[in-house]
Structures are given as structure tokens and as C-alpha cells.
Length: 228
Image (cartoon, rainbow, N blue to C red; front, side, top):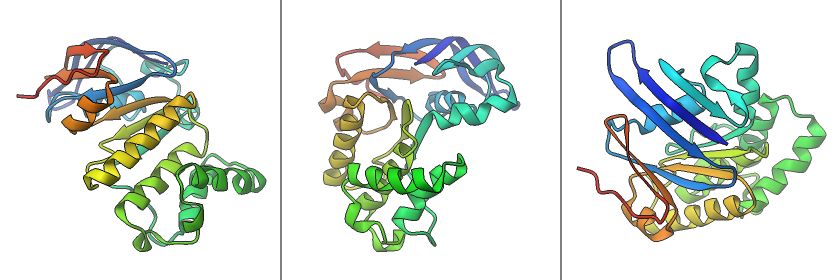
């Protein structure tokens, strides 16, 4: 589903984002990506989403060759990805329903498809009754659930969550992680970048640890590699 082959990313200011990284994430996997600030986590995610392109090496995502992708294919790649951000990025003047529907409107889904899919996505995250609420009427956890629904509404092959619990209390964080695990069990590949040691230790998933742009370790048993 995701494959980096000897991938290096050097930014125009000389900063090395990734250095000769080779890693493979299979379809249906749940993997954490961890590392201190500057470890390469953000670069790793940006390359997957084609927000950046590698300086050297290859990146494959869901059958697309991201490293030499024509501009015309970029929207199709991004439609196969669902993205959850730490800061929610909800539209404040739109209801929960309309925020989720907006993700379908961007990819030019039909009104009929939107009417069918949005309630399903809201139901999956347990917020069917909050469809008409605006973001400022929702708790932080509810807002993050709306972000999850928005990421899932187009049935992505890969769900990328960038620090999805960073602004949430511990109880709500576990609720969000349980939802991500449920989504994974339905067949979606899930990739979570996080600093939450307790979550990584407890969930016993694959852990890809980066340090200074290189692969520090790749553990299958949920063993957390402590950051310096």
C-alpha cells in the first residue's frame, strides 16, 4: 500500500528531511510513526500525500508512483487518502453534516451520493445526532470525530492521522484511537504519527521510529523506542 525505496528528501535550504529510507506498509496494516521533532515524520507524511516530492529514490502509494507522478494524477492519489489533522481544520460556518459533505463536493460526488454517504460516515463515528451542530457547539472530541468522518466519507484506501489526539484529554484520546482501530479492522490501512507514548505502548501495533531522517527501528510488537 505504501512503499519507500531508498528515499531521500533534501529541502531547498539544505535541511535533510529523510535519508535513504526504505520501508513498506502493507494493505490493511495499522502502523505508528514516531520520532522527536526533526526526525522526519512530517516529511514522511508529506511525501505520501504528494505535498513534497523526493530528491532521490522512489515512493509508491496505492499503486501510484508518487516520485514521478503527472500533475493530472495527483487528485486521484489524494482521493484515495483520508487525512486527520491535530488542529481539526473544520469550516466554522458549516454544520457537521456540511463539513463532511464538503469533502465529497471537492471530488465532485453527486448530490445523491453525498446524501447517502454523509449520514453513514457520521454514524460510524457516533455523531448522527450532531449533524446540524456547528463546530463551536461541539467538544474537542466531537470535532475530531467530525474530522474522522470527513476523512472516511470518500472510502479512502489509506487513513493518515497526524497527531490525532494532540489536543484531546486522555479519555477522549482513547475513544479516537478505538475508532481508528475499528476503521482499520474494516480494511482501511491506518498510519498514525504521534508522540503519545502511552498509546503506542498499549495498542501493540507496528511502530516505525525515525531519527534524523533515518529509520531507527521498525518494531512489530508495539515496543516504543524512547526519544532522546
